[in-house]
Image (cartoon, rainbow, N blue to C red; front, side, top):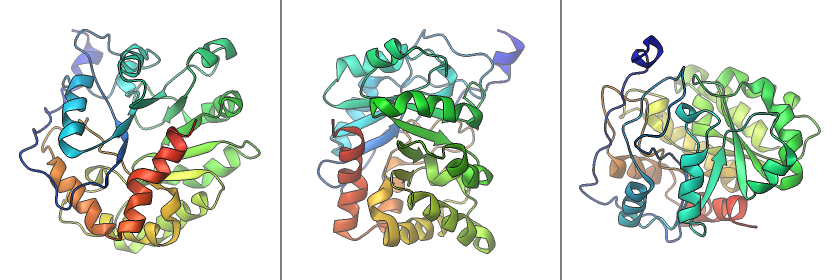
Length: 287
């Protein structure tokens, strides 16, 4: 084992479902953010973590228990540009899944056309991810294909996105509420930044993974942010499970608890239908 591998700790195993959330997810729910890992697949070096193995068969079982109809599989940083595990899953479930790949900005147009009906991810937070500087080059390449550009960024990068991608028309998706801090004294500034970005014609935000924004699972800030964004931009929000919850080493959340936290923030059935079903259907399965 190399020194770099020793610096990438093994994630905790996911918790098995022991109960179903109440209320249940809306019929037709799309999980817009999850990862899968296959034993023996080569891992990127350097990387931020070593995954506990969770296969596409495991997600199919998980999603079936919760009544999740379809999913958007996101390439994890630990596989770098090697999208084979993701593409294997999409080939096995072509009607049920879409994917967000990570590709070299110099990828040829021919290769991109072969990877049709996908999206591209920029990840500035993990080793093995692409920097925000690559966004413009990738956006120019994928815009004609109708792909989306998914961004895992730090909150201080939010104001830079519109300028970086000025003049390029494509769908943007911001992971995990942009990792904004939930402290009350600064929360409104970051919420306003998200709203300004969503005012852009095709920008979406994922209301996902509260444990990435706070260690206190009793913190009401996540629910308050979700409620505020849903009140003004329900047509621009997406839900995802973030299964199997990578980069956790000292506490693994319960999936039923996570879903109930988000449902408590988004309790209007009409708004919930948009966030859990309709927005994702249009963005990822509409062509």
